[in-house]
Picture (cartoon, one colour):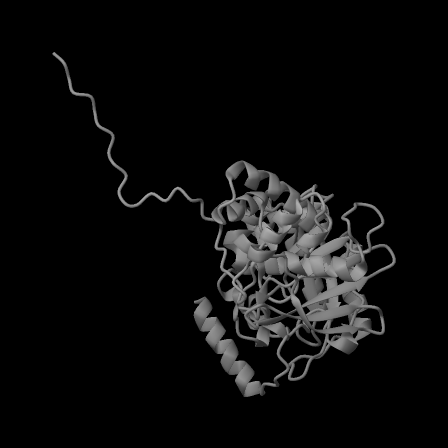
Length: 402
């Protein structure tokens, strides 16, 4: 007996054979920005513009090299691409940089840029030169969804996430300013990146991950993952994923070791408590004595700077067997702040207790205070808020966090 052959079920809906690149929205001039695109996205953008697939694959490889290795923003300089093809690219695409509204230089050499996106949103980045390294502090959001009470950025409402292009664009712009093209591993001034600018990186996970993959690509910007640190206030559910999918160094904005104080100054603690956070640190993929987790601890006078606080911090680090170091940060003042910086002698005593327990606890030297570029001072808007307004904003953010 012959049985009828099963018939494959039809796929419902229209099938579009044209590949669609990731969220490529035209700029105000109608062109597509190629900055922030992966190799595959570059190829798909070209195919979507009706370039033949084999041609698109070749051109994507060439564009990748010019954009991320050579730092090119003008198709005219891409000399291994035929002239008529360069004209074709110029008509349809652009390789952008963030718009610079203002660039400031501190008396200590720290540089701060106020940047503006194509849709008119402002954000900041900071470059901190040292004798043996140069660190770029990169923003991940316009504003911030959190409300860490000692942080100036925390007084801003979250406007939106930055795109991969806007995140990697900060690194590109710094390379432009430092004259560090073509990309090379030796002799760089920009040696390290910290995701510690405006915003909470783990609340913009996909875009931060995609941008850092571009930064770490050996054929492009070629910055080692060991030279990159991602800082979080403690978004516990995303921490393991960050270790697995990005794999960079982890810094945690701890700032207090009791529930009462941390609930006040880092309100996210009400959602993900200290013990839960420290367990996530213990479970962080790749953490070991060679790649320690950094705990950021801002020193606030009569708030979190007692000897008892230092001893409890040591106890917690030992309890969770954490390969850790503690960065002690003298509080950097800003207009309207409700806190004062701990006295230098108190900070030194706090550091000494932790060092004697065998845990590194350096005191970070404030940098760029005179241009409001120091830790916790970044804020793109210049408006002043009253204490009542800041408290109301804090309440709104806390309600949103749940």
